[in-house]
Amino acid sequence: MIFDPFAPLRRVLVRRPGADLGTADPEAWGYGGRIDIERARAQHKSLVEALVGAGAEVVLHDLPQPGKADAVFVFDPVLIAGEGFVTLSMGKELRRGEEAALQRRLLDLGLHHLGRLEGGARAEGGDLLWLDESRLACGLGFRTNRAGVEALERLLAPLGIAVEAFDLPFSGGPERCLHLQSLISRPARDLAVIHLPLLPVRLWRHLERRGIRRVEVPAEELPTLGPNVLGLGDGRVIVVEGNPRTRAGLEAAGCEVIAVEAPDLCLLAEGGPTCLTLPLERSAEALGHPGSGVANPE
Image 1 (cartoon, rainbow, N blue to C red):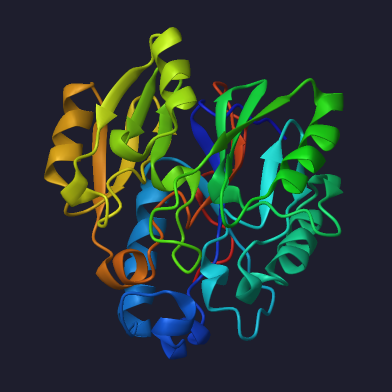
Image 2 (cartoon, helix red, strand yellow):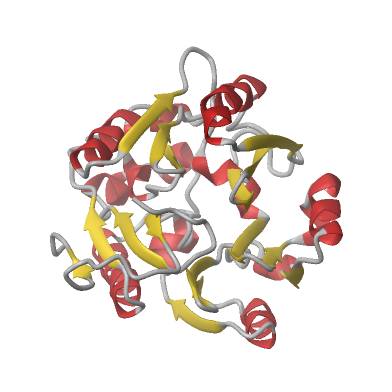
């Protein structure tokens, strides 16, 4: 397995929305309303088609996850790093149990298991952001705690990867999901998409020191997931439809923008393209797969 967080996306894992997403209580799960499962599945299919059209091989996580409405957001339960993965531990109690199923799927795919978070250590993928190949930013908030950061430090140190923690703002409080990647995406090595007013100051200083170009997301496009941008490599990105100022900023930065319409899947369930995808392989070199496509069609 080859993984460079900013290289072109070669292989990616997704999960089709399960029936539990359509029957989930919006208040309990923190959704913006009841989700129409057939519309959500159609929107997910459009995302998969965009990924395939961009040249990525798409593989499915299809192991049973009864009662786990959020399991469609495959980015959160694990961290892909080096030539393997770390099993995380979800801060959202309703999501605990997703980790073990995704771990089994990745082992089936032949990925190397680097270890897992145990005990009271908590971390979710949405709070983890690659600064470069050897530095990982962790957002300390309601979903990721200090013990989780320390566990990641121990597991990633043998790979030469340093971990740096950044405090997240209170924002909507413990019942709302504010991940670090709710505020910032890194679709390219020299580019960040940010909502500046809530960004940790130390993280802003990091971007400044390294001369990383920035696309700023206005306040009105934060609820519609403006910062949630999936980099495909070679200047291509996938965004949620309906964020014109963010899209204009990306295009001005030289990006080719692919917008997906997903009002049920993304806006009501509050998870965008980065949440719905788990990049497994990124490389500047073609990997010699027998062709792009979906390994197990929906």
